[in-house]
Amino acid sequence: MHPSNIRKINSQKPEAGIIKEAAGVIKQGGVIVFPTRCLYGLGADAMNPGAVERIIEIKQRPADNPILVLIHSKKQLEMLVEKIPPAAAAIMEAFWPGRVTLVFDARDTLPGLLTAKTDKIGVRLPGHPVAAAILRQVKDPVTGTSANLSGRPGCNRLADMGRQIAGQVDLVLDAGTLQGGIGSTVVDVTEEPPRILREGQVTAGQIMGSLYG
Image 1 (cartoon, rainbow, N blue to C red):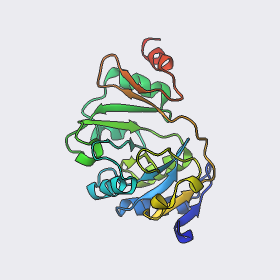
Image 2 (cartoon, helix red, strand yellow; image 1 turned 30 degrees about the vertical axis):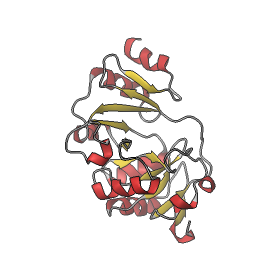
Image 3 (tube, rainbow, N blue to C red; image 1 turned 120 degrees about the vertical axis):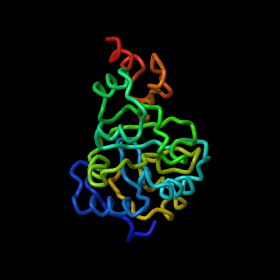
Image 4 (cartoon, rainbow, N blue to C red; image 1 turned 90 degrees about the vertical axis):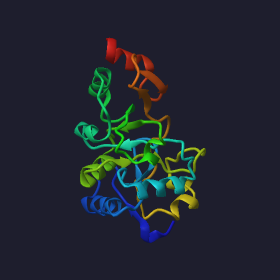
């Protein structure tokens, strides 16, 4: 990790200049490491096939593994998904921003590497101040996959990230030690009723409660 590529950033009140720099890297097709609520993530322009390919190469990720996308507003779903089922709307109202990733039917205009040809896309509206600020500045969807080699644990400290990741990205935002723990709950809303793919901080009971109360 080269010191010139690292920017210390305030986790709760991120500095505008650093956010602008990070967004500029993403807009130019670059890859950054940035903090989310639990773990550090790899951010790139989700609509840029070349940038998505870089993410896959950096993570040594199988091409049949879809990549999560982060958005700055629910309005952006229109460019990513075929439809927003009523159940999805209810879950978003209850739990966004943060904590829940929803899997939708993907638009066929998305890069194939993003969906791994599953025709589905996982989307989250993040609640972390740094991630949210970057997304507002970039204005386009950004990848939100964890900053680790495929199959390895995600990291909540940059010291645990490893040189293989750090040496291949263009910019690292250092917000110190993050919360860690389990990640977002992943819910497939293409099915009725929705199916819990991974239970995280939001329990299956809470998800179902938001739907059937």
